[in-house]
Image (cartoon, rainbow, N blue to C red):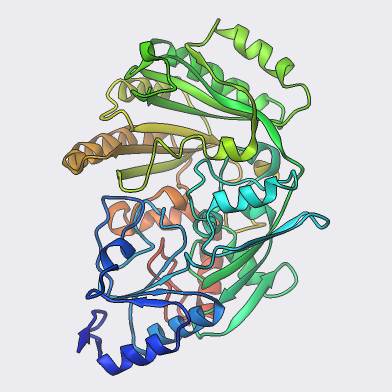
Length: 471
């Protein structure tokens, strides 16, 4: 017998064998040699042991797996790229639908669209679209899964220029909780399409996305760093400058430690600094950056220049490989008063490891022009999505990562806009269930109604969960 736990579900070996025989992909069990590798996710702090991992080869496999989970009352997790910081792509004792074999990307250069399967990573998408001089906005690390980042919203290097990933989503193929298959768009299943754009994995398994592409090839981009003692000055300038800057300019602010490795200058290794990672799509970028460079004199490091879009997207991949310990807290931010600046500077001086950081991602520009009820993503009037991240390759650092991150967030939270970007939240057990409601604000009740229509039994609940409204 193979035992799994959600309400003491017991699966016979025959049932598991029949399930396996209906899949084109691989069904992995705890006794299999590849099980430990298959259950690993990006965040090394997550250590969960599912009863079954279905590596789906196609949509038919996904339908079969959803049906099996529903009929056998199994707790179900859906894994795309495995990047979710809270580990919501994996689950103890239940069934994991692993979409990683479904990673194809097909670009239509005439229509300027890309059809992307649910297991693809951002690197797959950006590589395929770049061949045609096209891109869609999403993310800053190329190993991030397209599915997860999109369903949560999709902040990235081109947010001010082109909006969030969901603002460029045209349609999505979805396997629903009852095993049916639908295509959601503005025309068909419009309520579901609205909910998918920011509502996370609450409504089904998205097996493919169609994105709008834009003519973006080489951008003028990269990091610009200043010594930590200038961070208050730089942050105060940044909070005023960027919201007034042309939409062609994006730049996220960061506190960081310079990595002790090439190609960083040796004299900067292990120094705590502040920085802005710029991305400019304008036609005269040197003119755009001339006053920025003149503002504070020569930066300690200035790597801003022409760079292919995929190279920008993968710039930080080597610094953050899979397997590091991650703990993060997030908030939306509308203003950064001087009191908040002082808190930022104090905690920046206490970065617990050289990989730990704080980012302020712009979400104004084109993203901020979208009406807040146009999609499930509610905080269109905020200026930044803030994330505080404790990161280390060493499991022994776990507790101090958590303590620094929580303390930093706790002191800053009174200056937040209230909710947080769901892609940068930990589990509801860690955050508190009210945080999920706050993340969706005025859109939460509508999401609950749509959840009731498409997933009334809450089969898809291993996520930042939106409970279905009472029927």
